[in-house]
Length: 467
Image (cartoon, rainbow, N blue to C red; front, side):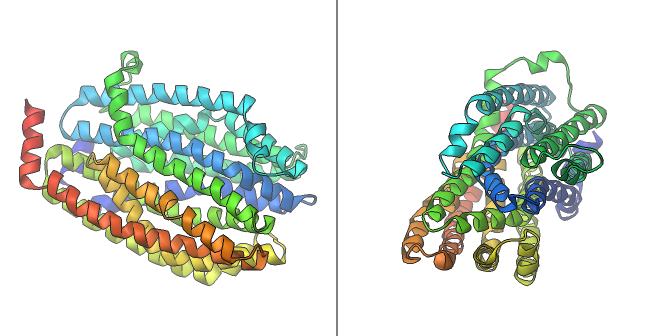
């Protein structure tokens, strides 16, 4: 009851900060997994840059794994918050149980891919046998032991849905610290541990994910008293699963499109030079810190908006939209300034060669121009999902990561003339894509607020619920 009361009556401006800050920290720490692995393997005594390229090749599939897990969690988050807001505890219980069931199904799929598909996937992106071998080893371990990531994504979102984001953040911190501590020990063979290079980077990652899952599950059992964990709620319920994915599928596609975009950009840039692929992969991992901060704020916007929508409170919905955008704008402006100033020190961490280093720096400085627009687009996606406008959220994802990206990327790649030094032209693609997407998002937002948040729309929704 205390949780429901907080979501219902605490001023949205304060509620957004109290729930958003832990979520931002949690999401930023999620980005730590990839950036830490890259930083340590790039400084290996032998084959550091090849190992770094191997992680870049594995990265799109890792993003896809996270996309499916987090997207399912987002669906559970919004549906649980909305159910609690309308007083339907039975639906909230079924949502939590069925989300956990789907996590088991998702893990089984990635387990099979890890055993049978990683070699073919990595081989489709490179002809370098060493990079292919290391990339396959790394990705195979990440897939086979992905159950920690799959289940953490659910219990993290359930904690956030009930206003207990501090606990989900604590679990995320524990996993990230575990990964950071284990990486140098296992990669470089310290403290008596055998030196295994890239493979141990993968083991450190999955161990960190398992630690996060274990703690999140314990916290869920301890503090989520408004959700029952009886076994009957884990029984598959097609209606509940459909409801989860009617909300979560756009989030899955949105995250998965990052994987598609990264894979496609690897192919486009690979047609120019291998250095451009490595530079883009490193830039994207650095950029994740900012994008994931925006995702964290989005994850605060969604349950607050969904809970208010379940209550039928238009004023709280509008406050969630206003403060969600305001705080996201502040985050992205600060991140842009920071990255513009510290682009060179960031690139230096990875010990890159001349052309690769220059391309990485130019990527940070050119693409960062679009961060404010990217943050607004991510916030709009969360708002649309919370208000049940999943298709509109999907349209935004398609625009910013596919429709407005590849045509411009191919044009600028052609203008580069196949010269590595000119690959920076491709970076102009991203500001163009985010600006065009923002224009589409504003149009969709006006329409959704009119059709779903107007007094007549909320009154009709309340009538349906009461009946």
